[in-house]
Image 1 (spheres, rainbow, N blue to C red):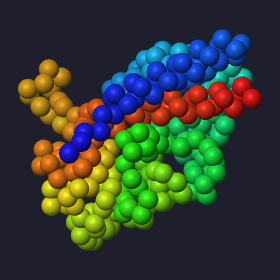
Image 2: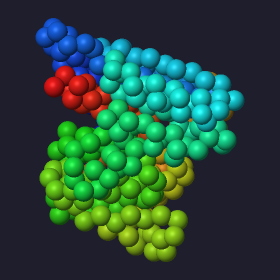
Image 3: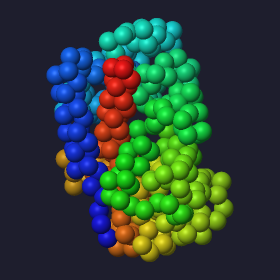
Length: 292
């Protein structure tokens, strides 16, 4: 069993980006600029955005954080999105989700300029992914694919099973593994809450991606020996032994599943750091477009 170290891989990617940025600046181009809109004070969102700001510093990016209270109106948020769309100094930006219930998230996502949509959530970018055109890809599945690439995990002709059908992870993950190339060329099955024979399907997976948000859901009897298991879950569960009072748990019963695997991602330190690194990769991609 080999542990897929997302933390170390993300560090390497950020160092690569930082070197490219310094060369861009040396050649007379401006630093890439990533902006983020944060609404309210959700603990998870605060932590995630803080990680993005730190990653920007490590990559040599300029970053801007725009804050709103959770009482912000939908129109005020739309106005902020349009302002960033029109700001030629900003290469890409994100609107941190989730948003308060009185705001239509899809309406906000669709207001973002697809050329600055470094989260890869806009229907234009999702559509491009579905037909194999270049565009921004949702950061978590893009990070997973980068891990598969850098660990030289073969995918051609393999059976990839994705548990979860979210727009952010499950669906784009399936499309990425279907596309031609390495990583890719998989036969893909997407399982979800309506799948009746889940264990029978997951036991046939050469590559199993768990992205359903249920701690410890994937147990040893669901995994084929020699499989590669990618755990996307990051759920806070109570833990009195931790100073914070909780620990992060993945969707996989790591202790019992890991011995069966050829490769497996841990939680934390697996997919999570790669999500941030992928956002940085999307931002440098946006900056390259602008440079041309």
